Image (cartoon, rainbow, N blue to C red; front, top):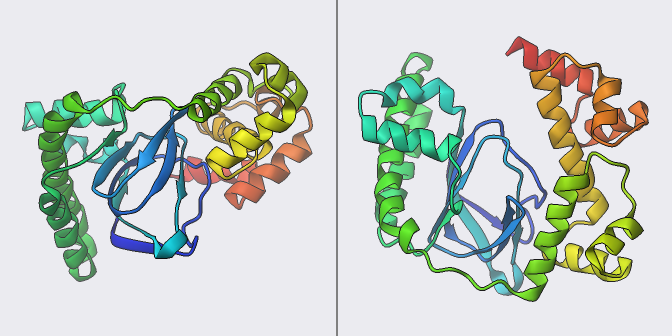
Length: 277
């Protein structure tokens, strides 16, 4: 977890990424855009975001004019803590919904009770350095119970009343590109074929995507493939060469190279490390 972590001058690494755990992110201050589930959302101060396990998301932040990005967050494996919620059926149901359900939106805007959220994160932040190993699990569980209870109240007050944001033309094009990639990332990638399918020129296609996300189409394609390969490495015993083929890379050596560049270790090492845990 982190409380009021602050980034300035592009110090926050802006890449598509995911976590094996559930991420609960409260943005105290910040501007920009994020992409979750192939949909683009505005980043604004006073919003709360839920990123479900293994959900690709990307934040592109604005730092011009002295702007900063300040957030509090908690990332955790939900199945480790689910038993603590079973005594409260309504809270347990909401907890399962936010990590397993289909959310209408991952974002809650214009939260009117910012102090409540801030105090939950602040309290845990103050306790963490003083906790012994034997105390941590209990205190983290209590923190999550209070955080989820606070979020449940906020969610029920805001999410059904959330205004629909008009889709701008550029945003619509980016979402079409992301949807095309989602349907075709397991096939060999050719920019001209994608452009033809989307009725755009290759140059315009590349420019729109880079402008909206901050990275190139090929960089995102590589990230999406590695993300899928991690799922296959951890849920199957398929050989690495077959996994490379299934994500659209016929060259196993190339797959291992880009995997290591993104994850810091080879696919074999990742699978071995995962098996230990």
